[in-house]
Length: 224
Ligand SMILES: C[S@@+](CC[C@H](N)C(=O)[O-])C[C@H]1O[C@@H](n2cnc3c(N)ncnc32)[C@H](O)[C@@H]1O
Image (cartoon, rainbow, N blue to C red):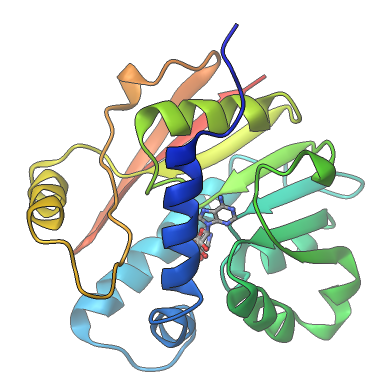
């Protein structure tokens, strides 16, 4: 039986992610996830992320009325808004209080009552049980052991987790090596590419990959 207590390295990564998204990156992230003009490179990332969000949301039933859904690491809340529009009771949680504030401010008025916004850890047992969990680009910074514990923690409380990882492509591996050799001054968290076949969690399956310019991400699913 695996020990499911979050490890010091999980806590350290989460704290680095929180500092980054709640500090230097808040405005950049707010802009990237809006309709405001961005550089051509960021535009490809935006398009790739839109495609990925649609792919992830397509894994859940179209009619989500009566379903409890966790948007784990909700950022500025794009997925939460779509889930709420499909009738789900959404819990939108992020470790960055500033991003949660932006997500709440962006939520269309008619849907706001369907979303419970929280600032905190997506693994908190106090959140209760869910029919579905979606974690878009929020587990990409964690080591394989921490990722496995996180998925087991979530799996114990839901029937389906749809999440993304950075795959071990040549480009992402090169970026990872450079990131490790030259830690950045803004302490931005490093994305860790994974081979999903090595992730030891029951019920794990691959949905598909989105590659658009600098956005390369793999959609995976765990079914309990
Ligand atoms: C790349 S952003 C993606 C945000 C959103 N899911 C989206 O796709 O627009 C990653 C988000 O995950 C959040 N995050 C990472 N680890 C978390 C944790 N343990 N608990 C809650 N949020 C977390 C970060 O704060 C950040 O907002």
